[in-house]
Length: 198
Image: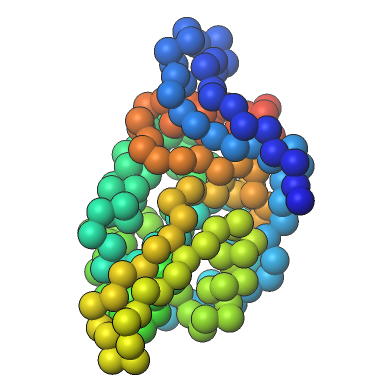
């Protein structure tokens, strides 16, 4: 099992201690490569490991019928991205990827769902095997709590951590909500600068 260093970030480049206070992160000792997968995005276009390469990404798994954790987290991530836009150029902004793990209900509404939070967000879903493969790579989990074959109002229990993925397609860190936008942006910016000082 990968060794991880759990830390509470208190400092960011030359800033006072409060700059990144309260951000809970798990930084992997070595980035963990994401296994190849094939999903589709909200427009029905293929979304594979290649779409994670060349830029940083924040990946969160959930489901569109989620009453609280998913909308709260996605709204927070939008605010974090907004704060990061003050620190990096537009092409270096991380993409936000929402992995929808309940395709039977998610697929038809995914485009409208992610657009509600930010037009730049990417929603992805697909076959159960590929959803499970990416979930495993993210060290996440989910469970559909169906009470029977015809249950349409079931809940989905899932992990809430967000994976911070490098431009090489490897997980560098995981962060846990709630996210204070300014402090979380500082935390992510620090990781990005450590990986690419230029």
